[in-house]
Length: 179
Ligand code: IMP
Ligand code: MG
Image (tube, rainbow, N blue to C red; front, side):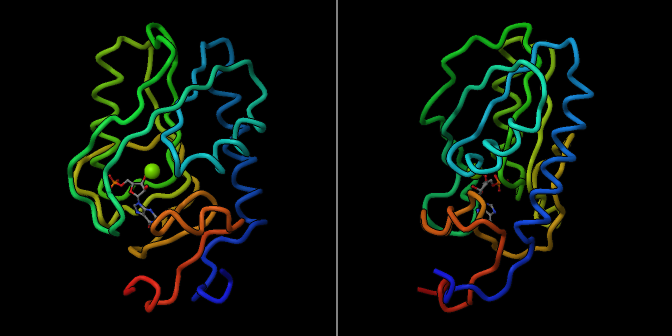
């Protein structure tokens, strides 16, 4: 896998530090609230598992699977729920955990669906933000890193389902994306 990497954008150590900071911030903000962490699979899984261990509060976790991309690197604009939540979110303080907000289409659709179920609040925490590519205006309450308009993998993010287990965020060599 390492031979496919062009450059590392965010190192393991930088991620560890930032995740700790986000966890501390969320812990402060959600004291005495009814925190429900909602992970958007599969991209969130590595980030989420590190982040929840930095949140020093009781919380519930649930997961959704939505499709927005297929296997290409461009958004289709079509979002579909493949797996819905198992828990009721009524009166809960929902915090959606995302790997990356790119066009924002996936997220704005998700927020709309979740709000219709009457939670007490809905906020968003995303490891990465690619603001240049935004098509739908969504506000991210907790952002790990803003990155330029480049397709990245690692720390949960994939290209064609591969590279999710790389411990850092990186850009692949152009010939890999062209395959
Ligand atoms: P959006 O709907 O365009 O915001 O895209 C959301 C989803 O697209 C993310 O949750 C990722 O799964 C995927 N995605 C967007 N940009 C990247 C990237 O640079 N690398 C890997 N996946 C990406
Ligand atoms: Mg995703």
